[in-house]
Image (cartoon, rainbow, N blue to C red; front, side, top):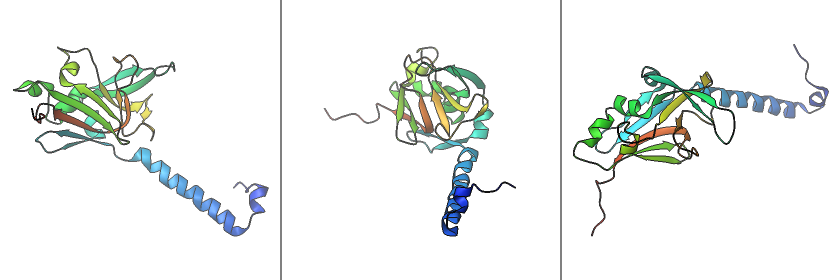
Length: 181
């Protein structure tokens, strides 16, 4: 067993106990953050929210997506297409075309940041935008500063719609409430 450094032994017992308790609390608080079961909430106007667990996401088609930010080397993510997430929650992209044309898809992070897409732009037959919801980075679970999910948009030039700590995907009918004339 290692001995404590001399400068710690010179401290009063109450200070040493406080340092030990603080170290224990730090380990206790930070370790479970990565181990928690990640859940993505998918909401759609007029429907009950659907909760997709990390395990449910892993059962969908998983891709490897590379992305580079601010000149840094590319990072490899394991991720699921946003369209597959929407379909798994009961809102396939084809269903949004029935009778309406103004659907918006928003990915919302825990800090309130939102990445917003027109449904047509993420429809592979119509738009060029490709979006994935990542759950692993370089073969390991996402760190707390990215978890529970990281939105990856490699088709955006500057990555401004990539979002960390995504907790919710919200599908909104933009034409449902119109301003009064």
